[in-house]
Amino acid sequence: MEARIRKVVTMTEEVRVEGEKEVENPWRLAGAAAVIENPYAGRFVDDLNPLLDHYCADLGPLLGDLVADLLGAPAEAFGKAGIAGLDGEVEHVAGILHNLVFGNPVRKALGATSLLPSTEKRATAGATIDVPLKHVHDHTVRSHHQTYEMRVPDAPRDNELLIAVAAATTGRPHSRLGEFASEAPADITA
Picture 1 (cartoon, rainbow, N blue to C red):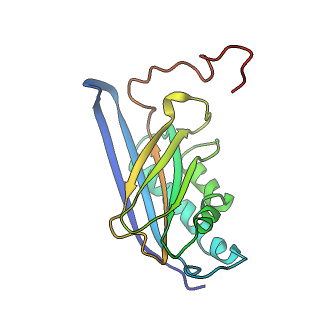
Picture 2: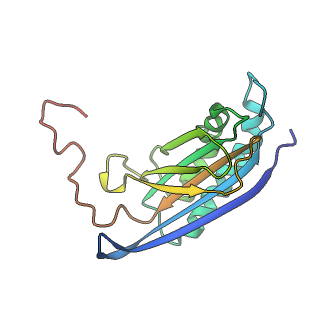
């Protein structure tokens, strides 16, 4: 397979004021996206393993390490997302994102143990993707449920996939929600 990575795009931000109130510890977020060729664009292929074998082992460490470096501090929240170009299938993105050969290096790079939340969609070049973030060790920690919006202006092209990883150093600034299920009566399960 001759598929390739066309480009890698990174972004960071640091929130210092939220809701007109200073943030005690700035909320730092970072994301990295790889734009890759989709050799299965425009045709149906039963066996996706060659695509997964080609990309997963490279993309997990690449994106996980980039985000960890960009963050510059331990991650408390993380997630992944992807976009298939119009000639691809959402299943092509899902195959990469939901593969442990991709996910385990991301978890390792970010010091995480929990399930990586994800979103997938098909869209045109320049579409935004919301990368869902959850706590790196406990998905029930409400303060860390958030999203990080990413966009690559020229990607994905119709025959490409965009694969992204993002992380944050803290939960949402000034989080004030109670513990998971604290509002539910005892006889209601979450």
